[in-house]
Length: 87
Image (cartoon, rainbow, N blue to C red; front, side):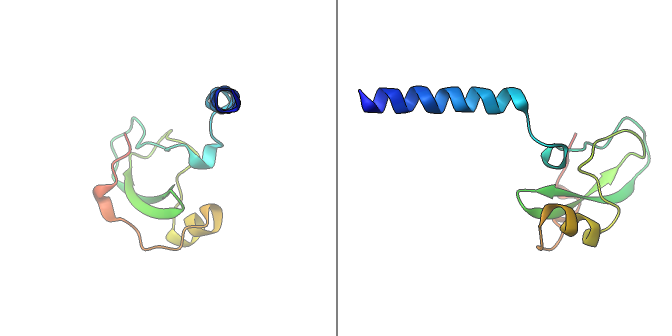
């Protein structure tokens, strides 16, 4: 019975968290709809990775420098290169 109650509480908590969403810093910023290819950094699981930003829109998880990314997301690892596509 306790296990069933625990499962119900965990499912409820997960549903509440999913509805609230993540803070903007943890949402992928995306490349945006524009077609530029500007190197930028984003926070991915506590590490900063590089991606190509299209130049407009996107999201808050989009930093001009590795240092700015590290200050905002706590990641101190080397950038992941251009392999981290975030569309």
